[in-house]
Image (tube, rainbow, N blue to C red; front, side):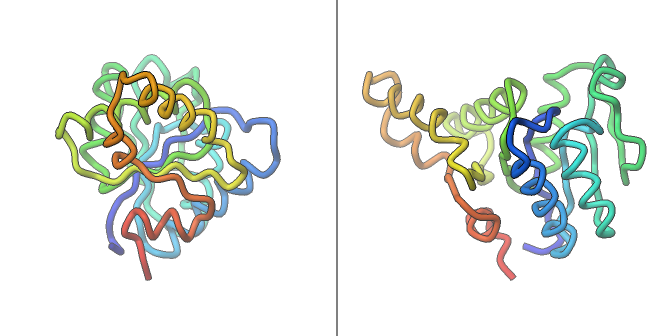
Length: 182
């Protein structure tokens, strides 16, 4: 799937482990090496800044999508290949989803969780048919997938929601799950 575009969801902070920064950097380099475009939230802070800088530094293409009101709060990235400014968060997500062939989630906070849940919901409703992979090298996503399992156990969701996403523990296995094989 070389030549495709992957949307990466991740934090606008660095998180508590130095490994998160390293993970974002390695993901960015790997995307650029494989000539896979990055779509992301357009900010320069935290893991968002690391993954986008890594793609750009390795000669790759980065599209940032940021709502007008966040251009200063998330410190809009100023070296992007392409910047799309939207009117609100809903338009931001729609644009990111439309421009991407798949979704890769790195560690992050509420915004990352919101984006993941939106993709899961759209996949469940048949609005999109694009893969979603949670990259969990240090088991970061276990509490999240535990919450999904609880929803299944308590009969608020069916077992089929497990088919809407994959959890992978390495970049290579995550890329394979996204269909990004060499």
